[in-house]
Amino acid sequence: MAQAELTIDLGALVANWQALNALSGCETGAVVKADAYGLGAERVAPALAAAGARCFFVALAEEGAALRQILGNGPDICVFSGHMAGDTALIRDADLVPMINSIDQMSCHIETLPDARFGIQLDSGMNRLGMEPAEWSALRGVSLNQPPVLVMSHLACADEPDHPMNAQQLQTFVEMTDGIDAPRSLSATGGILLGKDYHFELTRPGIGLYGALPFADARPVAHLSIPVIQTRELTPGETVGYGNTWTSDAPSRIATIAAGYADGIIRAMGPSTYLWAGETRCKIVGRISMDLIGVDISNLSEDPDSFQLLGHQQSVDTLADAAGTIGYEILTSLGNRYARRYVGP
Image (cartoon, rainbow, N blue to C red):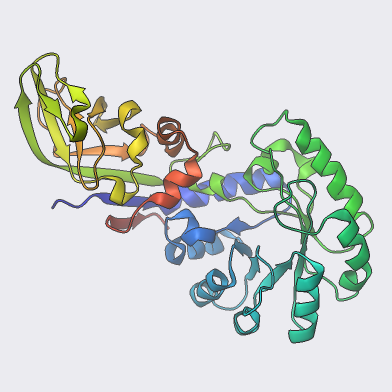
């Protein structure tokens, strides 16, 4: 079968959530936006709910409505984008919690769904989403009279523990929320690792659940195996792939494997990336093309049937470094052509 296989280890996912939950010392939610970072919300979210997660976060109301169908009644589903025009029916019917980002969104929510739950998102310095201090000051009294079920903000530099922005945002968030009774949330994965001062009443880990930095102790969740289609012998001076970017300087053996950038294997990572045949590392040669990649297997005693690109030997962050990006992009880029297999609870 010339189809690569993506295995998602739900046991590792749950273990990562449990480890972050133990560090939090408060309620721990879970971010499952972008189809659970590309790994499949239909399987990921129920596994996290069974482990004890009762508050889930998505980017869009449409994602929230789909998640409600998966989880059923009970867990809270918070929507980072808030109450957008056209979202009213989805918010009502799926019992979503929009994280209100502005006075206009607050007005829309009160007018269209006066009895529905909502949260508040504050901008503590990232300048992305949420109400800035002046806007929050004008709306605070009205909002707290409703009241919100959660008040949150987001850290810009939590993956850099010594960055002064962390302490600055913490101070701003404390000042903006001083005296309120609603639960508060400031920390995703990086914030959890900064310590208890950043935890408040709820944390909301995302990337750490899926086996990536900044949670260095995370267990790998995504495992990617790619089959070999063909092998060939090259003499010195022969080239591989588009543009003749790799030339053999000695007798070589090259395997062509069944995946490429159409499967989310970023083309730019080619010159710096290796795959694994068992415990042996083998380098990509030539350009990554849409469906095919060349791999130098000259150092192997036998031709392999497949290679591992992701797993215990190589993390999403290793691939991200090779591509000049971050682990988030590696995970969310994984394509739909893989044969997906779920293991664990």
